[in-house]
Image (cartoon, one colour):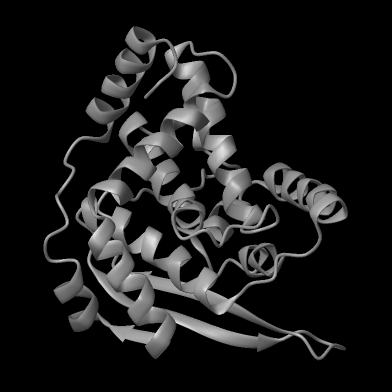
Amino acid sequence: MIGLIEARKGTTSAGKIFQHDTLLAGQAAQFGRAIVREHGQDPCLRKQAAFHEAGHAIVLAAFGTRIKSCEIRKRRVPHSYSQLWLGITLCESRSWNQDYSSEDGNSTMAVQSTEYLIRTGMDTLAGVAGELHSATWHPASSIDENVIGLGIAGVLDARYGLAHGMSAILLMALTTKILDQHKSIFLELGHLLSKQKKLSSGVVAQILRDVEPCANAQALFAGAMAQFRVEGGAV
């Protein structure tokens, strides 16, 4: 739930969306409470935070975004002896970024370009994909990002005429494929971040130098849809 707290402050990419979409913020809170009741609190482990950020960094790099730094931090839980590890990946403005608000202050997700939605959806889900890749995932991890990713997927479902939930599957499959294609880079970045806690832009750039660029997310998404249909469910 720490991620949701940070998001509401507008200090994360999800936060910029929540600032203009109180419905999504409410859904995240409701969804988060239900998950925590069933699975308990996210342990926010050191390795988990490191590989979460490694996932974000690789997908951002694939879309041509320069990473300024990757960092994990330890935070003490108020009124508790517990300590949680949180992460942040700072980057230059995403090359596909748009203003996420309209003049009346409402969310404009529905009118964003398809390229923007697919790239943002993949970037948003990349942290969870990183945790899954490193066997550190917890159901209560990154609730804010999960809700944003599902919200974006819902818009894409409507735009492409897909069954509800299909775009979420495709976005996660594409994100996972990028991490699969760069497994050694992902592992190197995650392990080094877990050990050193903060990596500069120069260090991150050196590790990510061989990440294969992805110029057209819409083409990737269309290809995934076609392959899903041909293979009857396997992307």
